[in-house]
Amino acid sequence: MFTARALALVCLLQPAAAQDAVLSDKMALWQRGLHEEVPAHSLSSWARHARTSLPVLRHRGGSSGCGETGCDVNVVDYAALSRKLGPEFAAALAENAKEHKEDCRKSCEKFYCGAAASKPWKTRSISMGSVPPEDFANEFEFPLDLIKVTEEPVVSAAEAAKAIEIARSENVDINEYTSGKYRLGGDWLAKMDKTRAWFNDALEARIFPAIAASFPEVVTNVSTLRAHSVAMLKYNATHPRTDVHIDNGVLALTLALSPQDDYVGGGTFFEHLGEDALVEMDAGHATWRPGSVRHGGHRVSKGERYIIGAFLLLEDRVEHVRRLKNRGAKLRGAGDLAGAAKLFEWALAINPKCATCLKDWSEALSARADVEPGRREEDLSDAETHLRAALDLLPSDSDALFSLGVLLSKRGDAAGALAAYEASADVNADDVELLYNLAVKLGEAGRREEEASMYRRALDADPAFGKARCNLGAALAEGGDLDGALLEFLEAVRYDPASPTPWQNLATLYHKRGVEAVQGLASCATREAAVAIGRKAEEALGEATDSWRKVMDLVDGAEAKADTTARLVQALSLRGRAAAVEELADFFESGVATAGDVVGRIEGL
Image (cartoon, rainbow, N blue to C red; front, side):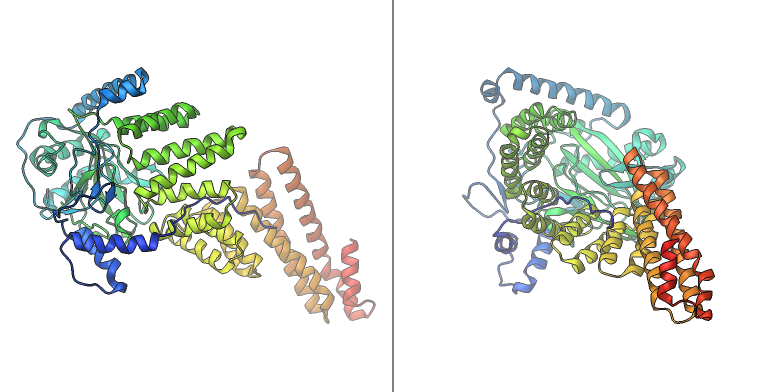
């Protein structure tokens, strides 16, 4: 048997999702003044265009809850919450304020802080969907057209090119770091003095005044804006994209530096709009928005795309929801699941429509279910409830769908897990791990052709993803395509030479070929045929022994090494038998024995 496939995780689409999507698309058009009937087959593309290009009109309404226009959000009474939740909650708010003050102080050490008049900039507005920002939800009023995209560049193309040149002189093009699932090129501007000086000039002259003018509901004046974390990113074919994520600030900025002619692909992907509704910007253009909007850098397949990304704070506004949520995530990582759950619960008390808080709380409960079996079913049930609540708010959240799949897998709902992967893949079609896990579930369901196709999609997105290559090879081998399997295993070894798994699969395949060749001797009618088969068997078994030796070098543990040793001995023994074929084949011409006799003599060696 080939190495078993990894466990799959996932995502589940709500039963009425298709109907809800149609109603949402129709509402999106109506709210933007497009009241004519649109053909059903064109509805979704019209709605995507409307959401990215047209403003929401201020229609009257009295609906409650969340809709295309936004959510009803109550004013937060922190004093009342402190009385209700107790002194620990009040202490957590004080800790938030202390952290915020220190972060703002550090920001001013590296990045521009100063007073200036706000300056309106020509932008177009895109809806961030139905759920308001996680912090200051009440202040961000209807309509939630809070994703701003410049229609005039905030820096000239020449200035943008200069920024790239300066950053290259500070080695930005040879540095890389991990962001979620992906390796990114680039570096933090806090470490790049010359590039940071260029950026600070742009902040003071144009960017901060424009952002202040775009969000007067939360930005008191330019002097309150703080550039908290700023990086220059370089996308190319080897560092093609980011995860879909939210940013760690009340506001966030993406500044495009490369001309669009310099690369193929790219753009900013806002998850709630659909993957084909990209925001593409030429050099010098920018988008600024609330930090809690789920987005990602879309895949670059050719060329180079440089951007600057920045997380922004407001000196006079403490983000209590974000800070409680972040501290909860740290506690969860440290194993304090009860403490993490309490912080997520407090964040939701401030903003009950914080989808990320619901997801994080769910993951804490799911983790506790793994370490406390006595309450496993109760915790998994509660975790699923929280995740479904998050998906009610953000139905297209691929991470929430993925996490829901984990729960469905843990609860034994294989069909639900598979449907979940498929739903999540529809949202985020080139997420490598998602496609990989979907392929695993398709294989478990016996849908072999779809399984192989999904592994190929994952490899199109990341050719170096060794696990997908191993599993594709295993699927091909199990379907009888040994030549195709061999190619995939060889590629897996090339991309991931330090992992024993591709070497094990390669050794198993060569071993199988050698055994089949030896068995083929029984049908030989001539000496030449027997010799040819013997040489073929010896070659395959030689490759098998070399591969098993490589496995021996890579595996750990006495049991694994003992198993590998046994397989290596078997391959060496078979190789010796195959080497004897040429000598024994002389019996063909003398008439002393039949081919079957030769096989019997070989097996007796």
